[in-house]
Image 1 (cartoon, rainbow, N blue to C red):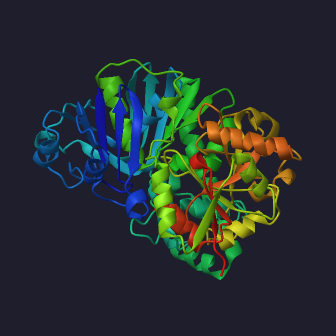
Image 2 (cartoon, rainbow, N blue to C red):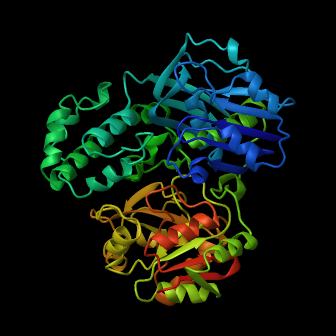
Length: 537
């Protein structure tokens, strides 16, 4: 049985679920090269998918009225005459993706973002008839709480965004105070602000954000903060630190009441605010007896998989899937064969040459001369983070590497940190909590004395947003890091996304283009052992 999920708001994407397991997730931005774009996810699916025989089509509410990526029901179902249509609520799909991806049999589920359309009375959806779905009880909400048990999820509170909207608050501050989010969708650079916070004095401006927890969509005195931010970089850092601290206070106060009431053993997180890895890391201190799982695609591109999973488990009553790595994989994008790689290399033959090597050769290169090596192979990652298939790798021991990559490769602010990819069984030896972070969802402090061994992946507050890597999740990447450990005694490599101020590269053509316009030293098509070098004139 196959289910197609579609989303056409910002972060447009589609997904395919087959017999309960995700087999495809493609984001439009990877193909049109426009970050976070709105667009025609149906067209993308029709262009890529060969078999369009779907049993169910799932989409979600976007906007004030019931609209679906600019299609009406007739236009949508004309392409899938034998399919049945289902419509999910926004946060319902977020909650479903987090819970059903996790291994938890039961959990408190928290979704928190900038808003999506939900029924405020928690009603159950029915099979879709787009024109007959009433709007009267549909409201835009930004925070919801659910209980997951077995193959069912149920809402326990849906909070109107007029009462709390942390996502919009951050959007507002990022745009107006820090001058970021100037792209077409006015979002996506909140992580830069979070990075600033590590350099700031959180007490200095904390009083200016006190309305966040009472429905504010931005500071009341924002003009003052804009002026302060314009005076110095340190002022920006201090403002960012205050914003981060107040966010943690607001969220903890909110979460505490539900943790106290329901006493969960497990928490699942979704929604764009759960990308705040600093706050997620602190949740392991707030709730030391609780297991925490973060949705691998917590922003709106994940609504596609969440909607499919909701229909498969909650509506069709199929059992949960435990212990299957395919249920939790993030490598759901397209794969490209050797012919694709060689064809693009031939087109660029006046600019690059290549040789055939093995992984040991590349590990040795990584250890020399502060080399920066881009990796391309397997299915592209779903989600905001590159996880070894579309990554730029470097030696974490280098004291110069952070500056080299920020300046010469990513062309971004000097203070932006980079992630360590670490073997999962080594986390306990390096970080303060022995927890998994397979999707780079968690920032933790290093254990005493450990951060000095890997200065390229340490942030200013002695933390890192790390990726824990298991062999069953990505066999090639795990064994590559293992080879690096055997030669250096360090079970960590620096990992950042293979891009330069654009979406993560998708195709071999994108990979070669990004390689040529940056100071990346080598490009490695890992599946085929092709090591690419620039021709120096």
